Image (cartoon, rainbow, N blue to C red; front, top):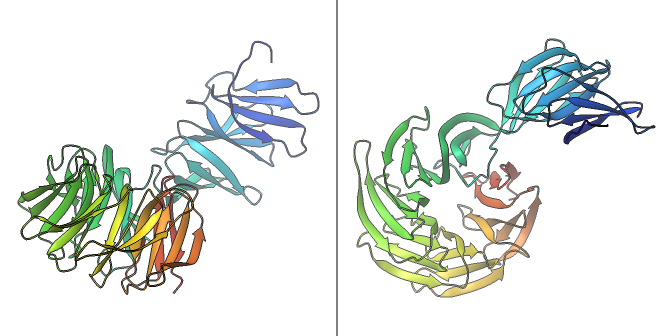
Length: 418
């Protein structure tokens, strides 16, 4: 190639294996002979594609589809690299992939922001067909008694879904949402953010309902609501558990409970609203009295607790964490009842119990979804599908599906096996 130096980002080979074409970070395409292994041509010489060429696809008309880092999709001549058609997709980020349908009368474009578009080749028009998170998904929650909708949170946004269709997106730029919950009456979505604020949004419009400033000084890491919709229990990076009395016009802190030495990773409120349990990375789970605001019981283990749940019967707890163990505990005395190995490798980050208490599900860094029999503490089913670490998962209220979310931004829906 002589003095020409390029960094190649994508390669396509011609149908007869005569040439291969290379997209480069410089925004041009190189044409190289396969047989002679010689550089033949490059282009365009002027008006190169901004932020480089990130995707290529050859079509049977001796033309080429090009995707660029600025969201541009273009059709160019295969011999001269002259631009024939071009369109720029706004707010899409870089084009990451182009896939032809059939002979190319339609093609699909994937983008950096986890959006998929369908293009009409003849008219070169496009429409959005699917969206997802492009950053790690931190939490997933169903509204009380509803299995049709669920909400997820990630960096910059909260999204409400109906199946695979995105119904609502609530954007808060440059801030990460760690946890979310629906109020029992369905009138607001409460959320925990790393800027130390608790934000409540209206679930239909996505408008901010209220915001609690400086809720925790090291970010809000866990959140839960009582069934009467009058109180919120939050956990922070500094280890405090705080109880808030909330209404549409006023929000005030009722009490702060300070015993955890590490960040609070999960909070669950008992069904009678008189107590809650918080799990922390300091190796403790604490049952708190929500009337007197004192500790009722504490659980110690040699692990960084990731999640904790009350059994629907209300007399037992189940925990998991970085030691890959699933432990059953008594609520009254905090004594361990049983412990089983939950994963061969990696911490167990997500857990949920079915409403009838017969089965529970776990998700971990081994990328596997496991369904367990609660009484026998044995795995009944295993789901394989995630390519990233699983962060959270939930069984829908009618026990028809399981929804799991992971580090790679994926949201997977599974059939509940019972």
